[in-house]
Image (cartoon, rainbow, N blue to C red; front, side):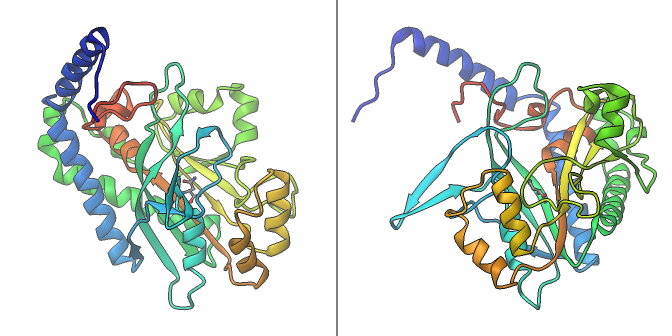
Length: 323
Ligand code: ASN
């Protein structure tokens, strides 16, 4: 079947086509991509040294992250079965650690989240990659310590390796001089200090990355049973206004807790019946983990205005997409 496009629409499309080529042809792009490559190389080196097992990503699966915020659904049918496109591999991370032979894993994981367009949004791509890890018998302190070590290693590596790239981009590297451990704040204390846009304001004032703890969010993020209504989860906030760069948590893994949290958040238990079965059989281990956005880290490292500046093809919500 032939495709016909109206003349006016075609004219508009050709303007978008010009823009797409302009984006690809930016002279900064190869330097940004080289820095991103160095980041990923350093991540792999660090993980390898620490004996964290790398798992290949899955792009479609019968269950994926429930994401307690509004994104458009995105399904695929195969062999008479319904698959979702991966929003994150959170459940696969938990389930694979049921193996007595796997303790610490990570995935360089492509995720699709069909986000709504938001005015002034500089940090969402509807398709991005996260470095997603999960450790058995770990708690939030273990994850903080690991991620801080990883960030320090990565930043020291790019500072050393990417001197020419930073010069070409016209930026310094003082933002990469991070001191660990990072400070920790609860969302409640920052909200009391800064008001509703506490994340933006606290990030804009900060010169060092910091942890933001305790959000009422996903059913799989563990509630602190000693302080009901508080959660053992966290974000890492990049300083200088770059805001959230990582999220994670200790997990709910016990059957009754998972069901309680699912009911609170109105999760479709039927769709999760096999995950729930594993929890009922005591097969989901106690874990904690986190994932950081690769493009967000690249944006921070390269000090770019918005996240779409680090991509070759636009994946910013609310555009016309040609490729
Ligand atoms: N990777 C995140 C985590 O480990 C989940 C997510 O990306 N929504 O908690």
